[in-house]
Structure formats: C-alpha cells, structure tokens
Image 1 (cartoon, helix red, strand yellow):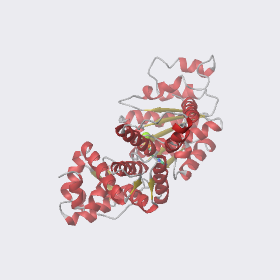
Image 2 (cartoon, helix red, strand yellow):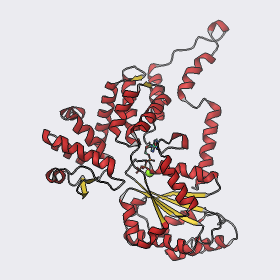
Image 3 (cartoon, rainbow, N blue to C red):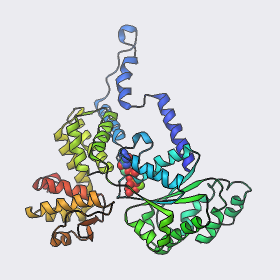
Length: 417
Ligand SMILES: Nc1ncnc2c1ncn2[C@@H]1O[C@H](COP(=O)(O)OP(=O)(O)OP(=O)(O)O)[C@@H](O)[C@H]1O
Ligand SMILES: [Mg+2]
C-alpha cells in the first residue's frame, strides 16, 4: 500500500475515533459516569459492571497504552529520534541519496520510517512502502511498487514503461529504465530487507541504486533492515557509497525512555513515579521495544494487585514475566545463559557482554573485552564481530541476559526452575 494512502487511512481512523470518544482511554472512563443522569435526575440506577468485564477493559487499556508490538503511528508517539529524522530528511529530500536504515531488532526502524513518510508526504514527496516477506527475488521485491508509481495508472511514459514489466521477471537495468521516467520526487521504502538472503538479489538492488543515481533519476531507494545488511549491500559496490547515506537506529537516551514509559503509563490510566520509570528504562538498555514490553508487564502486575500505581515490586514482576515469555520462544539462548550463570564468576562478564551488545552494536564501537572462554561458551547465541564487539543471534536477547545476570540466582526463580 502507498504511504500516502496508508497515512490518510490512518488519519481518517484517528479522526473518526477522536469524534466518537476522547483520545485517551483514561478520559473516557473518567467522564462516562458523570454524563449518565443520576437516579435523582430521573435516570435508572447504573448497574454495577461485572468485575471480570471491568478487569478485561482495564487490561485492554494497558495493552493499548503500551502498544509493545506495534510500530509508532505518528510523530507524537516517537521519542528521541530528532537526529535520525533530520538525517533522513537531509539525505532523502535534500541530497536525493539512497538510504540504508539499520539497527537491532525492535530498535524502532519501522517507526522511524513511518514518521519520516508522514513528514515527507506533507512536503509533496511521494513515499511508497513495502515490507518483504518470505523468500523473494528481485522482481518480486519491486513488482508491488509498479502500479503505485506516480503516473503509472495513465498513458504516460512511466505508465507505458511499467506496463512492459508487469508480467515478467526483470533486471536492475530494465527497472531503472522504467523508474527514470518517474517525474515526481519519489522514495521506495523496502522494509525487512534482511529477509533477503540471496547475495545476487542484494547485488541487483545495489546495481539498481547505482544506475538510478547515474541516470539522475527523481526516484531513490530506502532499505530498512538489521545491522548486517548495510555492510553486505555496500560491500560489492564501493562507488555506491557516494550516493548513499546510512541512518543508524541506535539506543534511545535513558531520559527519553523514562518519558516514553511515563506517557504509556498515563495512556493506560495508571501512574508511576519517575524513579520507578527509571528502573524500567534501565532494564531496556536504550531499546524502546523493551521499555514498552517491561512497562506493559509491570502495569499488568500492578493491575493484578488491584492498584493503579506501578511500584518497584511491579517492575520486578514485569521483568520476570517478560523473561518467562521470552524464554518460551528462545529456549536455546535462555538455556545457555542460565547454564553459564550457575557460575557466579560469569555474571560480571555476561553483564558486560549484554551492555556492549545493546549500546555499541549500531555505531560500530567496541565495549569491554570479555574473556574468550565466556564468549565461546555463548556460541551459537552470540557472535564476536571483533574483540569487544558482540552480536546476539536474537537481537532481543541481550536485555534478557542482563536481567538474568543482574538478578543472578533470582533469575532461576523467575522461570520456575
Ligand atoms: N522512537 C520511539 N519512541 C517510542 N516508541 C518506539 C520508538 N521506536 C520504536 N518504538 C516502539 O518499539 C517497538 C518496536 O518498534 P519498531 O517495530 O518500529 O522496531 P523495528 O526496529 O522496526 O523492529 P523489527 O526489527 O522487529 O522490524 C514498537 O512497540 C514501537 O512502538
Ligand atoms: Mg520493523
């Protein structure tokens, strides 16, 4: 679906929901009873709600407030990404470069690109978005964009060029010949690019970028993926570097994460003190996904206690539930971490690895060098890109390792062992 359609769809939905109810769910619960006429005013006595239904409503409100699994939908939901948005705007709108947006899983790449799309749309730039799924070849990646290109639906040079590609496989050169006919400034965003495993497909995408730049096309490409895909892409095409910009989606500053958690808590109808929000933010190590996930689980723990205030004990319970859920889907890594943590001497180096992986993986920096036997013992869950530079196979894992290492023996209790 085109970004323009997607954004107007989204705004339509937001406007509709805004008309029917106040934007914050907390407002709805607060204001609803006061609107109902009291028995003294002739209204019927309000029937008390079923507690089970009430509890479900509150839980839904908490899930919506923290929205841990969904990309941010508009600029108001985006924390701490001013520099990244500036870089994207400069590279794509001013310098007309191709861009690689890269970062760990859950770091906020899709959120960033969606908000960029919204901003670009406002200045008349066409941004078309597709997310890759499954094994896919070069033509499959670009075919969905063809009919959405500006002018493709009419008898125009681009319309005729695109018609010639629709029902066949095509090469980078064929496609560049058609895309150069696009007269409106356009960006094609390809999300989840790391799903492309075939080196020849990556090579074709790089060749397409180079051809478009050499032809002074009005259309540029933005690929979005986890860290390793950038190096892969540029490796075979050193001259492509001149036409490309990389935008790293790194960790978010601690104070921005605290604000994010406070906002999510408020939307959920709960309260939290800044120092308690800071505990959750610390465990997230710069990751907005983990901040929302831990916050969600802490809020649900508070709710189970019948309280609408998140306390330090709820934070602990939130970490524990999130860890248990993660262990269920990432059993191998969990098993390895747990095994190593039986040796108390391993705790400090494991914590260092977790910190190095979360805080330096994107900018290419290095962290403390950890004894080799500890690194080896974490294989295959961990790869050492260079001494002091550690990359987890599951990029969501380091925060859970940190929780386990920080809690030591308590980690065992978390998962009922
Ligand atoms: N800047 C941000 N401010 C607030 N929340 C954010 C931000 N970036 C991401 N999030 C939240 O973090 C979670 C993951 O975000 P998103 O899906 O954009 O990450 P991603 O890097 O695209 O993940 P993946 O690698 O799985 O595709 C979502 O819940 C999203 O709402
Ligand atoms: Mg994504």
